[in-house]
Length: 471
Image 1: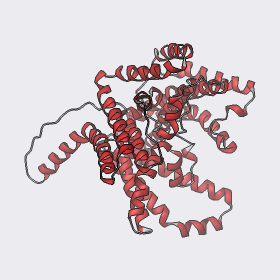
Image 2: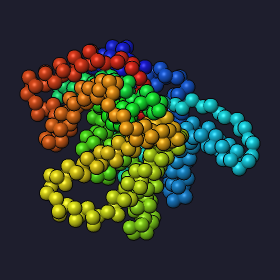
Image 3: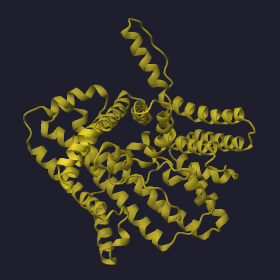
Image 4: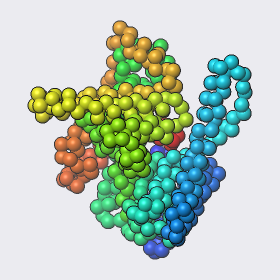
């Protein structure tokens, strides 16, 4: 069952009622049971790797706290790293590497037919293994005291609003809230309901409707005109953004109904002025995770200047590979790694351009350039396989751009994206990621009514699984 399925709101209402009636001591157990029931609803055996990651990191952290020698500390950390990353590698990359080895052997003239494991990937495994692993790393670094209650830590790993697709929360932020669960304030309830409406709007109205023009063009580039292909690429950028940020809004909104505040995962990324700022606004929980646990150590280990650029490229490559076992994801990460290296190397030309142009035109130029660079990267991310890119480029090069189908798709694209762009322009101008407190009661009512009408009129209930569930 997903957040956009029809039964979910009714089950959530029952869970909220039980949460409100229970004493403080029973709320954690209720949410823990809800997390495992929610996860088992997809496949019951998915709970096994979730349990394994929970027990492994809980006891590794206790071992770190009790260790009296550096060797024992390294052993505890090594067990956590090997267990979490080994489990992630086993489920996610085994068949991919076996197939890649077989294809390489065939190109060398060797005929091999290796057996494949055909493993089903547990939903959200990339998210909860990184979340659980960050806890052990923080305890190892001495920035976090280990959790002493297994129940609290198990809830931290299996907290259902953000279990499947993040945000990837740090234990220092989320664990204290889950250890002492409180009733939500009226402001949290109000803002939570707004985020839920906004999340549903992004997912079932914008993302699912845009997917109708993206799917055919990406599946068969030879059958569309140049204009249709270009529009599909733009539409996919908005689709994946609304799909993923919509899930994050739902997770944050649902969590606020239980009195728990999750971190902001998207901060209007398409308004970024450079590719570094884009990654500070896009999937913030993953970007900050790799910055703290990968980029920092890699940059410190390398030569000044060269080390930071190599670390940036390797970090982005790892981000790409984290997304999935396919060469297109590695290419997506490498593409952004190259962009970050070029951005760092272009400081002098950027400074001269900034001195030449007034502030507003310079910012507008940089934002448009960054947006189109991000759109290209997302096209790599969304293609069926890496070999499909030449066909998509060939489709873009076709002279015929305007057609009745293109006109209809363009009207649909503008209809579904314009309200969101207006909201984002307002949020950027006011520098307010949650603008609801700034509005009058009448404005809040009209905004919520608009979202509700759009959801009822255009929402595709269970129109498609969230894109990031596959990771």
